[in-house]
Length: 382
Image (cartoon, rainbow, N blue to C red; front, side, top):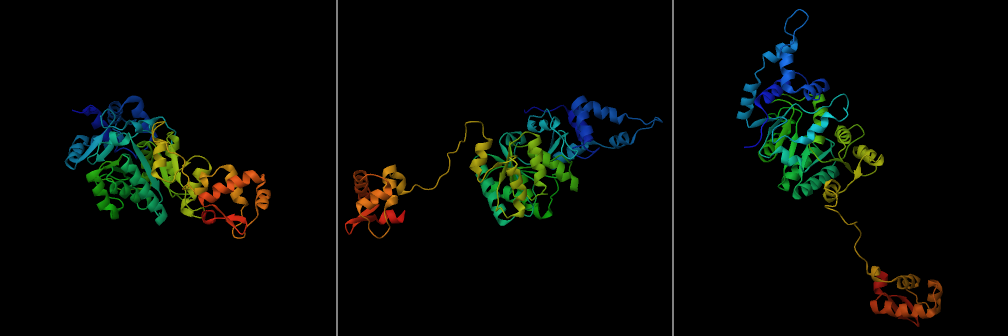
């Protein structure tokens, strides 16, 4: 049997998530410092100056977190908390990272729907994020990149939105890999509604994750706070297309705050949808990557998955030595030149040039013509 946190801890956290929005620093710090059970007990017993139960205490008293957990379980939704074997310990780094836009802290718990184990996926996962209004270029690159990552056994994490998120999820699924959608609503809801089939498919084969209890709807600020989970659940974040004010840059900020690698895929230099990525690369906050193998090289343990520098296809000229290349460059294309003229142009003595010409002629780079020398068929072709 896998390890589980105490029931009292789970119930306390399931109640506390109803008090405020995810990323509330005061509550997160109180739980980190004093523990969820003590914080829950103290808030339930809170009184105002007249001795009456405070608003927070009244709200906690009407909750039935144990029943909520049972209802979630009936829907195939589990509530993970620290101490569970499946808890992804990488999100604990949020407790000590700098807040972004006034939000931060480790999550009180994670509502999870799907067959994969979150802790296992998170040990080898990459966030692929970007613009909702992706271009065909961006969607194609994100899909190909996610497919390569999934093919190599990396989990792909994104936000389930239109554009780059959708392309990343679909790319990973096409490669029969594992993908995780981190939502800004309950995992029993689909947002956007147009992605209902995609999110249901992810729930059947990967994972849906949220800090919000089942039934909670989307709010604007919840997208920003869920972005910190996308960054914290992964070993690094890849941004594919992001304008200067893109929400994907918020995820990039969280990756930087956590000290996780940040990578960016460049677009055309005239592309506004890629301007934010270009700025990350220009300021050296992000490493430029163009394909999945480069992402893996950056995120894999040191010394693993190293790539050799890419180069163009070898040319027949590459096999020539320095003297032969210098003589070859001295030959005219069509008219012939006498040996003395070739030697003068090459800046060498006649004997060395004659020897090189013999080897070049044998290989097809040079040919004799009208008592002189010129480029051969292979020399003209290369």
